[in-house]
Length: 92
Image 1: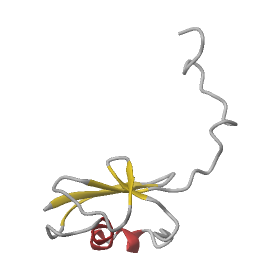
Image 2: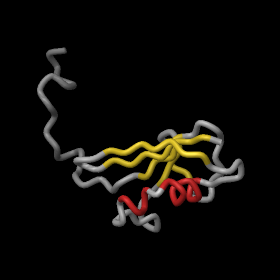
Image 3: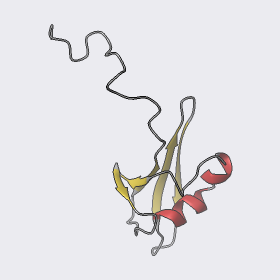
């Protein structure tokens, strides 16, 4: 079956479409995609993974067309980041 594997960093985003066996898991897809070779600092022991924006366990089964995502840790506190002009302002 065909699935996608996505990962994003500050300066680079990657989305790979790969073929996996019907019984593949999220972890199987990540390993098969080669993304761990491209980004050796990815640590699946500490980083969360998901399918279409929903966090799942690495052992989760996949369905055709799923998009596997590897999430990075949040590097700033959204409460302390100033809002951009025009976004959520009272002038809207």
